[in-house]
Length: 116
Image 1 (cartoon, rainbow, N blue to C red):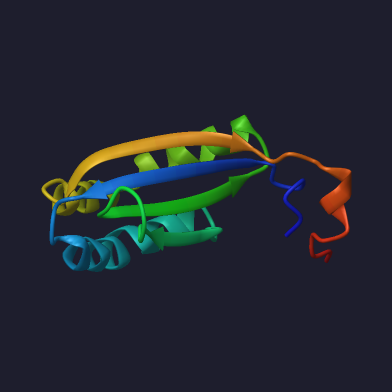
Image 2: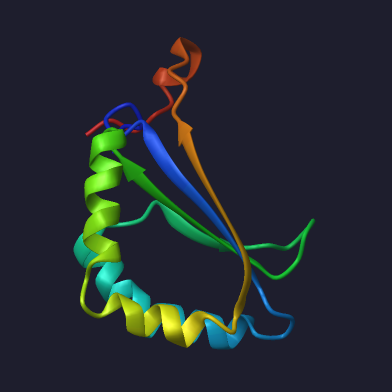
């Protein structure tokens, strides 16, 4: 996917309680992922921190526009199974940051971006 096609990225950072990352990843994969794949589509990726602040889980989702982000977020938030994930993960997440970042269209790297 060309980043310019979906120039808006939801960059989320969850800080997970100490020594609870394996439990969080299990809960996230079992309860959240089916809903997220259905409502948000395929993610750009998932990461855990190695250097810097520890116990962080990062996930990235791409959107065509702010309206696309709002519509898909609303679908996620109103999904009938989403409250079960929120309840199961509440004791595991100590902080959350959500950033919307926009792709920068740099001519010098356009040729490096995989084309369809």
